[in-house]
Length: 415
Image 1 (cartoon, rainbow, N blue to C red):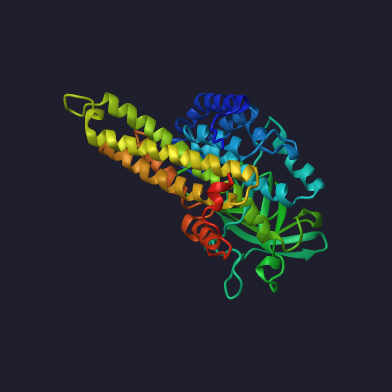
Image 2: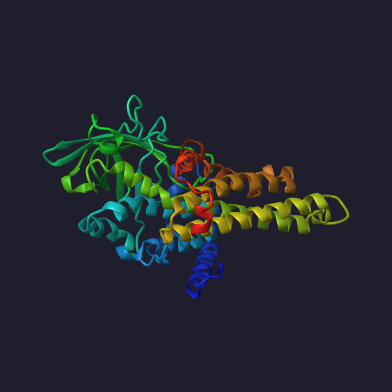
């Protein structure tokens, strides 16, 4: 039996390139957005850095090879996600949200749709944006609920021109685009048959940028990810062509669940990136700060133990994330379970570890002049988004555990 966490030469070069670009480009983001008053102003201020990341080929590097990109799987995405999130989570999340936005096209798009909709994201120029418009006001944890639950409230009806969509969505990354006219591609989750059960009534319809009837209700003033746009917006009688239906009519539930399967492991790795940044800061602080005493505070046992516990958790979350990504890449049985473990453990550990490291630094960590408070604000989102750990991800694990044929040794042995 071989257990090998050694990177290939290509992966090592990818890590080196990602780390270099993060330090040179993404490090500019905090200073660029710090004093801007509104979410849209902060988001626009990140565009030059986002465009530089595109020029460096990272978005193309994430898109899977079968669709014209250079991506070789989730494990490589995890390498980039950790390096980027360790420096700035705003541009990083904007870029990775594109993969979620394109996921329905990857999973169920026709060859023509794949050529048409993916092409702008294969370029190394510009600032393309894709978004998966799933979440709705009032919550979407029960998006597939049968009656009497509401489930998906957005609707699409057939008209002569194709599909007419009426929807209100929120917490959708970059959905309204750089200028309020919409992302280059919106994959909108909507109900196409109000009488059918959820597994036959939910569909995904692609809406291109500039569609008439899209309007911003407000840009959400989020606690963290201050340079990443998450608007609340409406689609009012937005009409698109018949052939913008993605996959089979009524197959939206399966498409959405498939789209969010791979992202779970990546969120766990995003937590690793934030923990790593906080640990590096706290370790330097502990080695250089005396806090009025005769020796650096790392010489105190309590501080040393806190740092040791934090590093242990970082290592565990990283390897669990890698294992989950590898299992997803190889489509192994048990891969989804591992991805869910990675999401829950990595995201919740990030909140706890950063809080513990703030205790090492003390009250000064509560000042926004130091980065720890900002990292905690960013980390708090991780257990809540991409399928909340309580409303979605633990429920998915519960469903797996309830299966009559479930083998508790199956997932750890599969990868």
